Amino acid sequence: MSRLVPYDATLVERIDLTDTLAIFRIAPDRPPERPWFSAGQYCVLGLNNAANPGLGGVSRAMSIASAPEAEGPVEFYVRRVSRPVSANPLTPLLWPLTAGDRLHMGVAAAGTFTIHDTIGADDPRVRVLVAAGTGLAPFVSMIRSEVCRNPRADLSKWVLLHGVSYPTELGYHAELVARAETNRLKYWGTVSRPGEANEWRGDVGRVESFFEGGRLNDFERRLCLADGSFVPRTAVVFVCGPTGTLTGTITALIDRGFVPRGERIRRALGVPPSIAESVFIEAYDPTPPIDVNDRPFVDSLRTRMQVALAKLP
Image 1 (cartoon, rainbow, N blue to C red):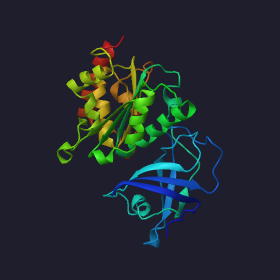
Image 2: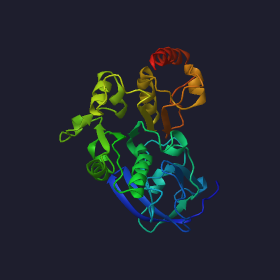
Image 3: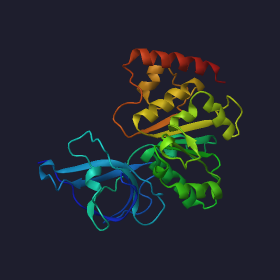
């Protein structure tokens, strides 16, 4: 039997947005002194498989949606996986839990998908946050952290793009709309299946499509930028979600000279060490966003990257 995980936390509350999407608020038995994590980091949740004890316990990293400065339970934004890739997936075990149930929550946070570990707090550029589905969680943490530290924080240089299939999956929608009204956050949700949501009047398409073709010029205008000026000198991009979102965002922005983080990808694209990264990714899937062994694909990206870099000042 696989090793069991210790139960050292309690589910305080869950909020179901759909049948497969929920917010879990969890209190560890021995909460460390705040702040014990940085906005954008993750920690581990775990459960033992009671229905099939032979499979033992399972633990998975989950991005934290809470602000590091906030008191109370720690919040996670979770989707139940419909087609698991492992024999003992975590989210089907999480789904039957109700308030008061026990589980494991590690209180050692990890990850460098943070403002501090990427661009630094004083970076003046526009920060574009690209989220697909529950990839929204680390960005909610970042925005909440800014407001916790200063309720009147000016978020006008923060741009949050959230892509989902249906409007009901736009988690934290009311909270983010409020931040747009009171703190000048630029927040745009986009729905990829509008034909099944006739009431939707917002943006449509996958979230990475904001950067494709003529839509990129429209995106610049919405940011009050001149045509062609959405480049690494003026903006930095953070992406969180499944592999398709990461790949689509990276490849769409290569023609503007945006350089993805990752030494292997940089080398494959021929990016000199002197040029700073301007696209930072948090991957939810193990598949790399750029397969550096796919030579025809990488060669075409490399050519585009070199042309774009030659145009940058």
